[in-house]
Length: 133
Image (cartoon, rainbow, N blue to C red; front, side, top):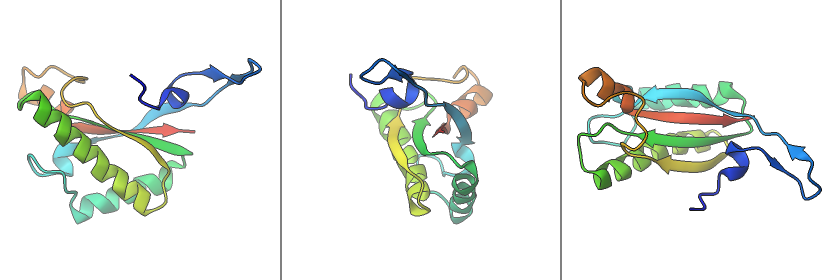
């Protein structure tokens, strides 16, 4: 699957074989419980202000936004919700001039913790902001 972020996430070379280095790392992880109501993807005013401040201070060249959920709903629903939440975060970044190069929704497919406990599920409900410097 060509998802368009290969040049940002992996090292590559120019046509002449010279390595091109682009550093990227997860520079922000927001627990979605703090920014979104259950099953919603609209960010509160206070949440928008915090995110705007994050984007202003991160000083990255570009950003990739990745949404994640716990496993409580169907895969289809979680994929849609995680994408919509990532898109809402990206909209805040774009509103202050951040270069958002990709938006992803992974649903429950990339858990950070086990979904067997409430604590684990809370860790999985997140949006990651990947900074490209």
